[in-house]
Length: 306
Image (cartoon, rainbow, N blue to C red):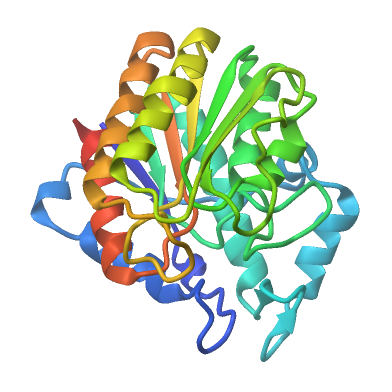
């Protein structure tokens, strides 16, 4: 059974009119999943992440800055792209907490797969900096929780967002128990993710040139990233599920379709079955064309339900 973690608070993070990372993104995903064919999904209210959980990957000063920066009205800009409103701190706590709860669920046998339909996204947030729309690094908090509480020795993070997950890489680049693999467009924000960035042998980056499409994306995963994951034999598969490499997305220049997200999701489910007793948790990252996001997210969920 698939578990879906979300929370109404994630809709109350309001970066302002015209901002790409808007509440309508999550609404589009949830509306697409409000369909009879998804009736069997176990829907769970996301808890807040605890300070202890956040401290495994974030400095105390960063946590205090995020929790203390939410204004009572209007918005506060943390950098050119990253904005907080009155509801942002609660949304960030629920987004990170969803990923932690999802890990606990799949590790305890309450469903093999889980999808966290949350915002703000997380994979750009470093240990001490909010950036790229991200406040806390949701997938990193989940991975660190799995290491600390469930005693796992090999955790894989697969990131297919069009932007490189620089925060996730920075957090784990000296942690051999976590393998981070990423496909992303280059050149593009945040300018990291070069193939020469290897960490301690646990980082695998593979970039795509502007204009690349389905063939290049699938070949990259089939020839480079999936074999690396297979050789690592992860005990848990975590997915930074960004859908902004879609051909209709306004923030990048790749040419994927929703069928490509179905394909990569199926590949990661197969990997999890082979090595991790099926255990897979994914969390929403980017995707900024509402129609493309809804179609791609449902293709992802369909693969997780199969």
